[in-house]
Image (cartoon, rainbow, N blue to C red; front, side, top):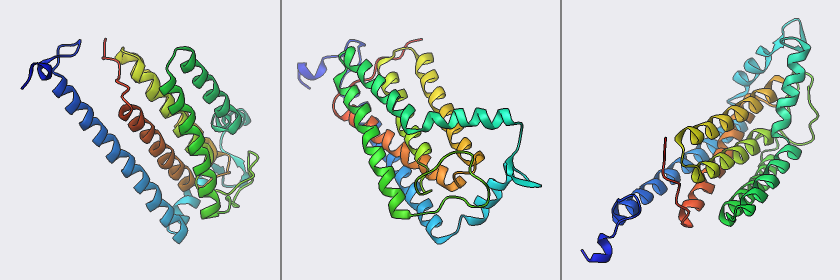
Length: 242
């Protein structure tokens, strides 16, 4: 081994060990992304064949008053609150989040992070629109819709784009933040919002549960690819602390 190979990074770890760890992380992320895409296409196949119809109906109706299917369970304030939550996965809010996050990264001279953030959301938006047209699944017709809809049902655009946007943002923040608690909080908040948005879509009767699951899988796959790109382009995560 040459002297150059024996050099260490600021934390005292051999560079060769660091490179191996990065390669291992890249492989794990790639496998996770492949698994997410596989889960989406497997679910899409089940949806196309009608295999999810029964469970979709059961879950959707479980959110409704059996005596009046136009009435979601719980008080009207809950229904209104879930309309507010579902807006967190809407085009307007996600566009604002993406623009603000991209500008914030640019202001801090993190051009790669800004490019990954904007690029991931834009690609996910196109993929969502294409998938909706390709699978051409009608919206649920068992109950009245509690929110305005204007596109096909599978996959859920709100679920997919919220997953792609918030998970990517959490990943980018975590890559710059050295404190473990802050990294953890970023991911927890992202997952909480994503899950809440998905549940709100079923509660409001505008999506089948399988639409939401498909959206989560597809969106997570894009976020994992974004993480892969960030690491591949040489962005090293901040060393954990605390």
